[in-house]
Length: 179
Ligand code: PRP
Image: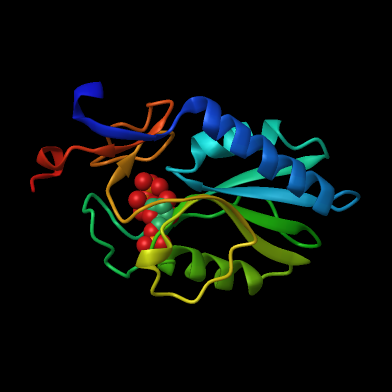
């Protein structure tokens, strides 16, 4: 698996540091409020696990599954909502937790969807942002790192369902994705 890696963009230590920083900011901003983190599966699962540990106020968690890519690497623009939250969002402050915002289509859809429910507020948090690729107009309250327009893997993020278990974030060698 490591032989497929071109370059490590962020080490485990660098990610940990960023996650702690975001967690601290969320803890300050939502102190005294009823907060629920909603993890957007599957990519955000590792970020979610670390982020919730970095938050020192009471927090509820839930999970949704929405996919725009399937097994392809090109956004189809079609967002499939596969799993919804189990708990109610009513009278809660919601933060949607994403690993990556690329075109922004997925997040835009999800923010709109959740804002049409009875939550008090709905915001988004992403570890990675690819601003060059953005086509949807979407505001992300909490952002970690900006990344270049390349295939990246690790820390929950896959290429064709592989590499999610790498503890760092890296680019892939072009031969891996066939260029
Ligand atoms: C990734 C990522 C976001 C979305 C971002 O998920 O987790 O949900 O794509 O792309 P966009 O900004 O262009 O909409 P993916 O569909 O690859 O599913 P996964 O998290 O299960 O791997």
